[in-house]
Length: 353
Image (cartoon, rainbow, N blue to C red; front, side):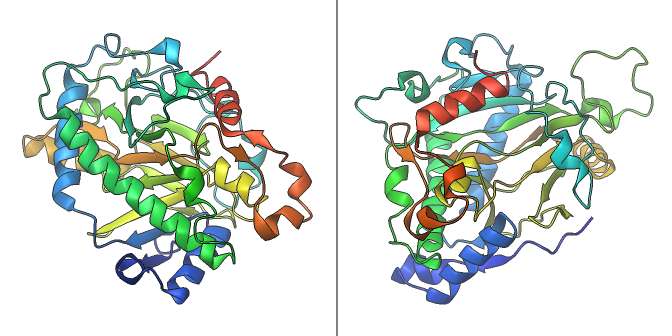
């Protein structure tokens, strides 16, 4: 599996001066060719990521998966226990890839947990109130709001910067994408997976539903429904992403950097010039090695992803922008309210009905 196919782009000059034509073109090329990129952003504070991971490990270790869950709101705030979310079947697409995914097809429910935390300002009114609901604040964590907001806002800031650089790189106005992100239901969206069985020489023969063993699919092969997904460093490996060419990549995120991958909303706004990127998370041999090391060092055995879903605002219309509106594929992307697109995707992945 390749580890060096994802471009690494320094956005520092753009952040400082608001202009870097070469970097903007590089961002646009990376999103078209790979669907993802790693960015070096001077605003990324590793200490905030560490505080966030510490907090979420402590939360998942004690959560019952019920008290903080909001199934009536399509699980779009609060906790989602394992065995609920299930990826769309993408068997045909998976079969054409150079590197095949390890996920079952048709997919099984994911073994991962999830917590959704709203980031940023919300609209005063929306046709899609359930997608813009107030946040759930778990009891017993006085530092919760500060820690979640500090890290979540950092990730959304980077996503907004990349959106503006991509727009300029594609020959659009700087705010073509970012103005549609204002008051959107951005989500800090950490996943949680209990890896304790990976540290045992002889795990129990009797299997329990959704427990994590070697080879367990934590998140099935899928694309994200939002605009841009942002990933900080996790303490455990397991993520694999696919480039447009069908190559699987195990991304490495250097210090001071973040991984970004395009979602379905980006694909819609560019009429497929940027494709939503496939990815999966599997408990691999490398995951097991990291889990055993964590156990030896007395650290938590919960794998927490440092993930944020940057969205287009629910009441904005998704349709190809600028030069993409006249492309041959534009007709495949009819005007759609973003909230309707999100609800349809949530139904498809078993989070809504």
